[in-house]
Image 1: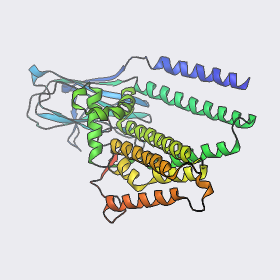
Image 2: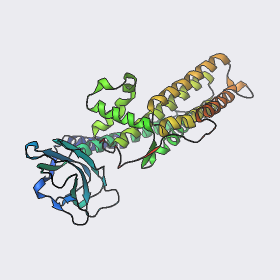
Image 3: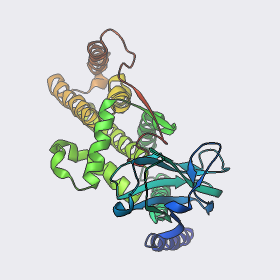
Image 4: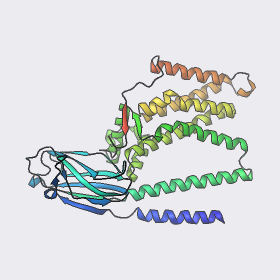
Amino acid sequence: MKRKILFLAEGILLLVLLLLCFSRSGEVAEINSRELQRDEETGELVSSTFPLSPGVYRIIVEADAAGGGIGAGMEIGLNAEQMTFHAIRGSRATLYAGTEHKEITYYVTAPVEGAYVSIIPFSEDAEVSYELRVERTAAGSRMTFVMAVLLCGILNGLLAFRRKIMTGEVSAGKKWTACALAAIWAVACIPLMVDYLILGTDSVQCLTETEQLLRGEWGTIPFLHLLYLWIPAAVRGIGFPVMTAYKVLFVLLTGAATLLIYGVFFGQTKDVRLALSVTALGVWSPLAMKWMYTQGNPGKMVIYVLAYALLGLIVGWILGKKKTADRKISPWILFTVSLVLILQVLYFEDSLTFQSDVYYWYNEEPFMTGE
């Protein structure tokens, strides 16, 4: 009875959130270039203030080329007189001469009373003619719906898993194995909990190709990259920031790597403890972490995981079908530890520290909104 009530409550909640996803964009403010005022302290051109509630907003710039457009160009952003820390998330956009239409996305995480549009023109003497609109989009509702579906799925999965444990369908050994795999996955995802990622030059290429995929420019993207780029592209299409899309890709790749490596090694050895140890070593390896986080190259991470699993199959075939539990010292452990250490020495060139052209990529900039 309780489960039926829970399912009913979840169904009603998800239905309401789904209906909100189809709501139209609502105009918050409409500003003409002639209505902008000069801020004496900063020298910026600012609009009149307007309130914002939590959600996803966009500034739409429509330039009249016949009347001068945006002149020599400008920087434009969304600010506020007073707001809580990180209440407005997003980057200032740079518009160059000749731009006739531009949309800039911002994420508002807390109520803002006195928001305004600020502009820094590249030239004070150029004649300009453009209009600005600030609209609230349905992306916030879509994000809320997706997160609610995810949370409901996790809750129902945990309840179903608990029920199977209570009824004896899942043994104590399998329960702790599942907990160990979840812990391995969670530990590997710890770097994703911070407000930034340490990324290298490969990340910029991945982000660029994701935006090209969203624009339909498939011909410029290598085919193999499309095998995983659809994940951040789908998340971006829902409305999530680029940072979140990238984190979702990392979470899914790490989870798939954990399950694949454990499945291969357990299938070969039938030794749960050994398979869990080798899985943790493979997923937590500095080599894997470097490709995933420092270089930001999902393709190399996939190749690494597949190669790791393939080596497991080869070694399992060489060792034969005899269980490693029957041996005093498992050659699997010696092989895996030696392999990882050798790869680390070769790759890091006598150093286990992360060496790369590092970018500390914060949520605000760059690429928060794909600009």
